[in-house]
Every structure is written in C-alpha cells, then in structure tokens.
Image (cartoon, rainbow, N blue to C red; front, side, top):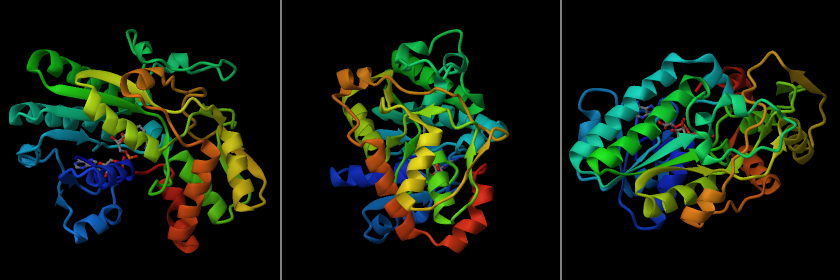
Length: 329
Ligand SMILES: NC(=O)c1ccc[n+]([C@@H]2O[C@H](COP(=O)([O-])OP(=O)(O)OC[C@H]3O[C@@H](n4cnc5c(N)ncnc54)[C@H](O)[C@@H]3O)[C@@H](O)[C@H]2O)c1
C-alpha cells in the first residue's frame, strides 16, 4: 500500500490485516504518521519502507512480489491546502503515473486507487438550493475538476482505464467524499471544528457563509467500500464512496458545539477557502456493483470522532499547531 501511514491508509491497513492479508507499506511520512501504524510495526505484522515514491528506484522496488496495490499516497490536504497550493498536488500527476507504470511492469494484478469527489465539474456544484447528487457519469467533457488536486485525480482515473484496456491491468478507482473519523487531521473541516471546540475558541470560526453542503463519510465505510472494490471491480470503473446525507457546514459546527458543551459565538469567515457550495455523492452505483452502503450516520460518527479527539489530544499542543494546519498538510 502506498500512503499506508495516512489517516485513511492506516485504517485500510488494519482492515486488510484483519482479513489475513500480508501488507507492505511505503510512505514518506510527509503527512502520514508513524503512530498510526506503530502497533503493527512493533508486532511485525507489516513491512514498512519510509521513502518518497517519486525518488529513483523506490516505486520499482516497492512493486516486487505485490499482488494488489492500494494507491493512497498523494500530495493532499483539506480545503485550505487544495485551494492555496497547486504545485504540490501537480506532483501527483507523475507520482500516480509512476506507480501505475511500475505496477504494470512488475505484473501486479490490480491497482485500487484513492480518487476523490474533486474530479466532479465545479459548474455542477454552485447552487446550494438544488438537491443534486453527483453521479459517476457526470465526469465527462467538458471537464472542470477542483483545482490541480482534482485534475490529477481525474488524470489518474483515466490513466488506469487506459492501462486496463491496453495493458490488461486490473483497476478500480474510488471517489472518496470528505472523509472523517479517528486519526483525521485538522486540515479537514470536521476535525478543524472539533479542534476549535476542544481549545475553546470563541468566537468560533466557520469558513464561508456556512451554507456549503457536504456528505461527510465515516472512515470505516470508506475502508469497507475500498476492499469490496478490490474484490469486485477490475475494469477501472470509478465509483463514488460517500453518504447521501446532506449536511450544511453551519449545522455541523452547531453539532460540534452542542456535543462539546462549548458555548461560543459563531463567526463566519467568507474570506477563507470554502470549496464548492453543494457537493453530495449519489451512491447507487456502489450499491449495485459492490453491495456497499454507508453504515454511519453523521451525528454518530461525529460523536465517536470527538471522543477519540478528546482522548488523544492535548489542548496546548493543538493551540500551537491549529492555525498552521488549516492550510497545510
Ligand atoms: N481525507 C479525505 O477526505 C479524502 C477525500 C478524497 C480522497 N482522499 C485521498 O485518500 C488518500 C489518503 O488520504 P488521507 O486523508 O488519509 O491522508 P493523506 O493525504 O495524509 O494521505 C497521503 C499519504 O501519502 C503519503 N505520501 C504523500 N506523498 C508521498 C510520496 N511521494 N511517497 C510516499 N508517500 C507519500 C503521506 O505521508 C500520507 O501518509 C489520498 O490519496 C487522498 O487524496 C482523501
């Protein structure tokens, strides 16, 4: 697995080990954290190489003897990062190209790719009044992906489809939608809100006008869908993994305040990056092809995530890193 020390990657490692897989992780720890996979390293349940896959020879060596590649490594962050950084995410174009090319050369059976809701056209996501659900087929010309990050995810999906047709590589792409849960980091909205409440921020910042709609999806659901896709999809089809629960940012913020008991005045920050105002997945294709349905309702997942955050963080440390983390990776 590439990027196996990440938030989502480390949960995928846990689930694959529980199913009896042998897992080899390559991660340069630029945004992943060793502590996410520490227990498995101590028990020698995984092999791990700390390296940048873009450096000469690293990806080639990583592919040796591998049956299925879960490719999660990416230059990626939350909304602040994706809007404000284009050069970093552009490097995903050659990272993904290299991983796929070396996979073909090494005779890997299948590549399972962590794509994103950012491949959907921006122009479809501009009206918060519409009850719109993004369907896989909406990704077609004229393309209008979300920043360089979204374009690279789109190019990777298309590359995998071409490699399936022309090189017989097995492939599946999963379009993850705003994932949250334990081990998440503060550059993503839900964890940022939890962190703000945790340190008692008042006024309590909410980026944008709060009317942006999202379908936050719990990490365990993302992991189960990813494994099902590894088992059931071979032709490079891209599938949404996201709930169809529509939640406004302002309502998520109010829930965080309610659950934490923190009483604060909400301060809207329209000057900060907001992303598309209406992004929710249609998940019928995942149901049809994978038999997948998300199990976690947002309120329940949020409570679990808040409990985890409070149990594993210290206020002073969070105060020290929060501002920087909001736009970094
Ligand atoms: N978190 C979300 O809401 C979300 C949504 C859509 C897609 N995704 C995708 O899911 C994947 C995992 O994301 P995440 O949120 O768990 O955290 P993340 O962005 O921290 O994961 C990326 C991982 O790849 C590693 N990495 C980056 N560049 C590398 C390189 N050149 N060589 C080796 N390792 C490298 C990082 O250290 C990190 O562990 C990413 O591909 C991301 O784009 C995430």
